[in-house]
Image 1 (cartoon, rainbow, N blue to C red):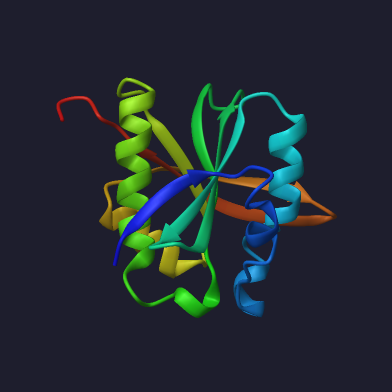
Image 2 (cartoon, one colour; image 1 turned 30 degrees about the vertical axis):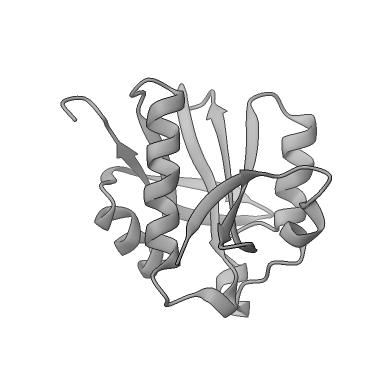
Length: 155
């Protein structure tokens, strides 16, 4: 297994759009297509493909979130065909290394719905700590999430 990250650009965006989740997972993660549109039109939004050897197997979107005044890993997904193989953990560790080097040990945030247990456990495994619970409303529904933080001080 050779996991690495690569910027999404005109050469690989279609591969990114074609990555899929299970039907159950789709309710937790916005589409890669929407994420790429945000990257194109929003300030401080960045997209990375997750590769295993030469095959794109996942996607990360990170951005500077003004509501928390910090960097956030807003989207993280592994295509359903490549899940349960250890790729997600290795990809997160690669992203954390990339982020730490690029942003000089600034905190990194992420959030996860409270009932989405698999990524919650994965994020904790790579060092994220639960910071607080929060609710938000979207399309008439109320969602409850956990804001998680990864700090690099003392590393």
